[in-house]
Length: 458
Image (cartoon, rainbow, N blue to C red; front, side, top):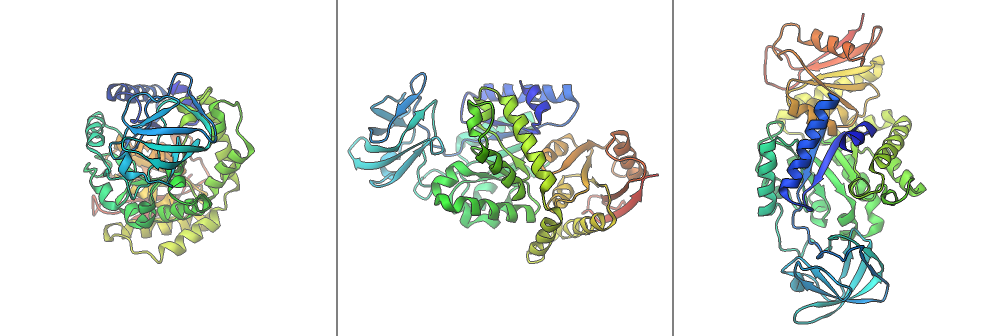
């Protein structure tokens, strides 16, 4: 199934750690690596840490139907739930939820309102019914949730995956840049690319500092939609994407992208439009959750998303996007170490646009050059060359990037010529093309990308 998903269009496999055991998750990771080897191309792996996610106790077999007007008791505990009592695995439940609060289950599938508080439970009235399955998440306002992110359990699981060589880690319920720094892994590519999930009101308030501290962001629309007024969510999505991309970070749009395809063979018209609009907003990647985790036809869901995204790419206003990013970037103050690379990728975007270059070849140690040029969404294809397999897998998250293993040392005399030759051998460029090549100069090894060449392919 993993191989079929990859062939249908999956670039990154996300392993959620909120369900199942750590050993099972590591087994999945190793199977992805096995598929990667059989296909001969990089497949990134992202582990998604549970964070202080509050979940209900297991629902009965076949799910628990609840209807509008029903009354249920919410009690702290991890025991299985029943029609009368929904157990919530959070010790502070009675203190963190107040009478009048809205409670959402499973990203809004079911909604309830707290109507009474007793010594050992909360009484809640169902305001929107539905079917609760598995261990659905229970949303508690993040400003009241007294659990920090990452949790000790998160860090324990992450240590195991760092040992395995995981490529990316998604950090749940981020509230500040300090939460991101508490992950404590080595900077990428030696360590995993840290993806901050934007799903709390505090994260929206601290957006720029969180983006700067992260390797990328995920717009987790389920909990974010519960934290913020629903009418604000589309505008927040656009704002987060624009700020993240301008700072040269990949941005993932997630949650309920093709929710109907958990059971249906084709998406709703609204879902197709949502995917296309996420592309038009500048998303680097689109994420499936239940559609591929528990859906009836995961491969069909991936292939459908890939088709809709590819068609939206055809209609994307590349020139207007690049000009907008250039304008926003001119008002921002990048870190001094990034200034040269950001300036050179800006020049490469302009040069490729004005000369009609067919490709931009990026020779990169860490992948930052690729992520920096990708923020402009150039019409020229982006080919990222690196000698580091970890860097190549991390590039699978970047918009428009084709990772290619560089088979010579960065200090080789014929470095650029060999990169061009490899691109030709892979069928990515051909005779008659004009290509731009971004690299670091040999005179200053290990420094920023400081060289740009335009090369006609003879």
